[in-house]
Length: 379
Image 1 (cartoon, rainbow, N blue to C red):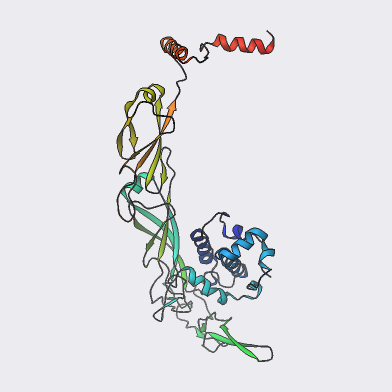
Image 2 (image 1 turned 30 degrees about the horizontal axis):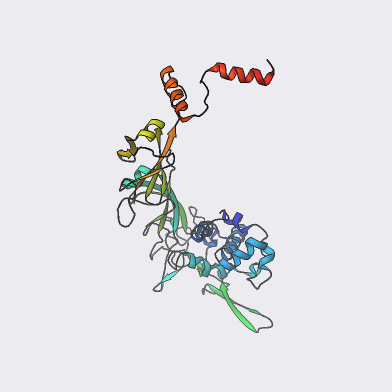
């Protein structure tokens, strides 16, 4: 039966997630639970189908709208896929669509089977967005087992032809009294055409082993949080059923960039927003002040009478645009600062000012608060 779990929970995305975020979440789960990476695991196959079901709904604006309004009941009001009858093979077209026919693993390019794409994340500081940087990434991927050369058999023992499919890799099934036929992947050899009598001790018959790889990735200036840098050919080799020895194009590595939030600047596209503290006197009388930008000191001319919350834009002091390299603005937001302590002279001057404005103020002494407290307590 179709799942009753919340689709957003399955993909681990917020209800406000956009299409790209939904796609990226599904891609991660599809890579993790793909049957070729979890042979014989019913749980992985179930999670793979579950993720596909969630993606099919959340990637379709009409279905997603019905689901958001009415939940699973809203989807039963109109014809939809019966995911309880879906085979893993039926989901591969969805899986390949996610990778644009390029990263599905087993996807063909000009008749050549291609390996799976992989994904990893790196963190960078906001200052590194300004300059660009190189970042070392470490990840795991499945590579051809060097002991058995990818065929999964113990050295010196050759695989034998699969007796179930007779070396075809596929079998035919019939239904409804022979009214139709369906070709599926052979359940015995899983499409590899051969079976292993004595598995390789290193890969346990899988033909692939997990290896760690470290490489340096160049991250360009102006990259945004969540953007992806593709490193060609650093994914996995073609799956064993397509090419035991791993010949053919590898998949790619997708490096997702996460920009660490800055303690002073907030990013808005290519602009940088910063709060600039200014005193009442400077706002009232005008002043020329300096504030720190992301790459040096910036001068601001504050006209007399400037109000709290006023915005000043300094051209080309923001971050570079990823495509044009032209820098955005530094957006300075004026914030008035009230001193916590005043000298006697400052208090006197402010009281005189208040008199000229004909406004009531306290004398700033603790005795005033004592009087208020005494009046409230009846002291």
